[in-house]
Image 1 (cartoon, rainbow, N blue to C red):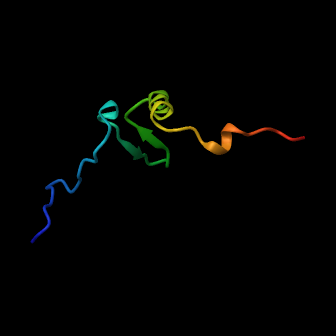
Image 2: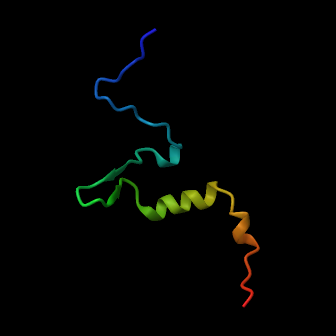
Image 3: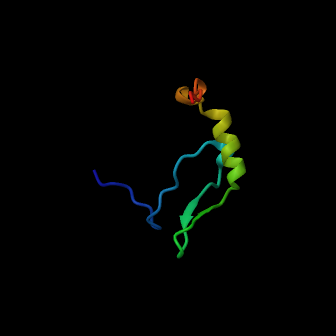
Length: 62
């Protein structure tokens, strides 16, 4: 059975509905260009990802 191929060669990734239209590209200067504001992405990650256990009990012992 042959694989299905998209004429444009790109297959749109599945994304969470809150991040619909999210794209990352690298410009000619090597900078990452996003279609969604960085603050909106950070708010989404804060809401949907658990906190890192290593950072919860972090105390400085100087």
